[in-house]
Length: 243
Image (cartoon, rainbow, N blue to C red; front, top):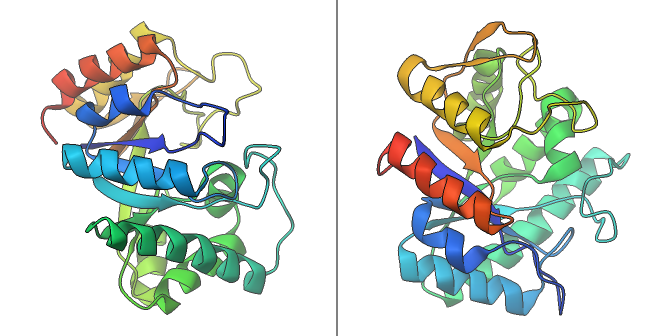
């Protein structure tokens, strides 16, 4: 599996994450596009950092919710979702080209990601946005028990999909992520490494109640919000290998 991480989420004088420390240990950088975090200077610096370390770059679009860090759902129409995806992706795509990089994929952020996984109309709007884009881009979404259905939807839209698992998030019995407001939703380091090892060896995770869930993932989402998390990414890199 590849390792992907949400980066470029600082804004102005406010710093989020340890991008410089994280970048050497990952394969794919999901770069904020300005709607939930990130600004032109942060985007440029993150792209150049990815280029320095040979990391594949993707756009990390969100609902227009800078104050809420993109974690609040919005009741947007199909046309609004298509337009906001095009707007954010085009900005990342153009800035990547200026750095002699090629944007390869799109991974929605926060509430937009959650809505994509839970609501067919949102997911179809995002697929339509990528199908209409002027060149092919892959869509990154969660590997769930509906993976075959989601792949079929993407195939019909002519969009490549990359399925991801999560290193530090607990899974519910239905294969979705346990809501952040529930106890144990985010694993500590010991549980996180155990989950990664289970994914690597058995292609499965253990749910909150102990059920074994098959997870077929192309990439693994990690987070580098603090030094302990960065050290954990190094441990995960050792378990997963070099991508």
